[in-house]
Image (cartoon, rainbow, N blue to C red):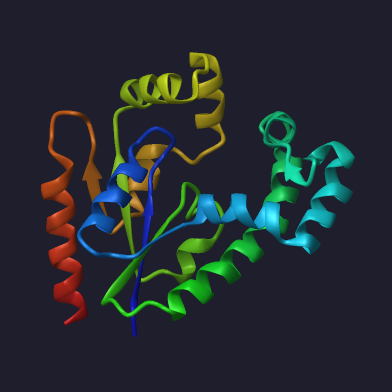
Length: 196
């Protein structure tokens, strides 16, 4: 049996960077966020359900109108919940098919909302990526070209970072003081030892 390992962290924590390091050392990584984007654009049944929920403007020329959807769901928790209820099962099914094809001791499932979505229940271990809030705010403002207020609003939608890290089995500190690669290698070593 392959070990299923989650990788999570709040917005701007650097979980994608950690995921790339795991990939570089040969660990397959499934990005739930990327899978959700692709399933919302490719699964015809899901597209119909999203259109029924948000109206014709949800898609432009067959592609998801991300800005339109984001403006709705980031301002209305109920609509976000409804969207997640449609997207999560499709993404989960996609991840299960992907895991079944892997041949490594463990795989990583990268997702921002592992605990919030209930995905944590299907995982053996969870790695959290932690960065102090001021660093996360700076990173997201630069990456997404958004205001501080917009970043704080997005952060408010995720569970508290300290709480999230307490729920994780391993924590990587990505505070621009400590190197991330040695920390990833250490966790990798521990996971291989558990698997053997």
